[in-house]
Length: 432
Image (cartoon, rainbow, N blue to C red):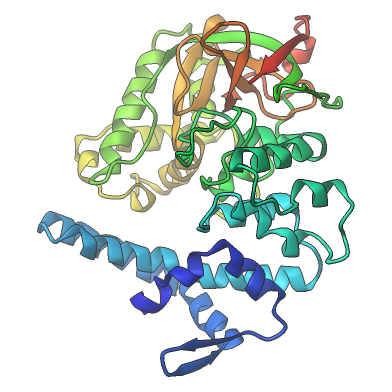
């Protein structure tokens, strides 16, 4: 099973199209001739309860044991890869079923492709044509953006797609782009503009799902693409970041220690704030716990978001905080399986991880509590873009005359269009 799931074939970007468009799919593996439907059904069971929970729990225990006994890293890596690879076949089957009913949304196809491998980064784009375009579609703007061109650098190809998305789905573009997260760019002496997503990097599904916020109001987004490859967008400047925690990024051995450190650092910043959170008129404590879960909750990873969070979640926060600051918590091996004292704390823990993973807690000018991308810096500007749901972060470039896009953020008290009514001027930012 390890060899079958770990085969490089499953990771290739072109395989998505091959399987999704195939009328009949069969797999020849060694002496075995397998029907796709049987394979997809069998491995689909591995991603469903109760088998998935059983496998996941036992895998964590085994990995922890092997790490503690000094077993070679390759062994541990192979075990983890089996769990991850087991999701590839069900994912491909879902893609096939969706494509059989019609074309896929471009943004969904881009994300599915970003998790795959390709000889050239540009192939992650070219491999999507059969999923999002009709075979006869040669003249649309999307067809132009996705046109195969092996002579172009990946930066030109990615930028071409980003220009198309700027006019068709700017919400997705701003959530996907930015230098606030690691950008794993190939070393070919080219650099992506900060407003162009790096589709060689995979983001979590939750990071990109629709959000309930309307920070930029209900107006229409406008932007200009300049001849030099920069873009000009209208923004409302809100504040600069004054102090930040370290990002909540898991470590290889123990991610609970990282989480405890993050919470203690955030509480230290929180303690310096006034008793009343002025932007909302809430108590400091209420504003804090709402911020570290982005004021949204879900009961399970598959249920819809609830916004804003009911006030009784204050009790869940107190239960969770008591558990996470307990000295024994440092010995917990995995945040997902961490069970705070009492059921109330478990709900809070799930939503805290979703909101704060790979982000920093920050305090800005004016006392706003903010969750920002992991590579945000002191002095970065928090802004609102009219027509865009999430607030964003910008940074001056090295020359100080243009702006670099960092990423989206959560600003407690500015998520429902409040910035539009602050009476501040709308400014044009030229973004490189």
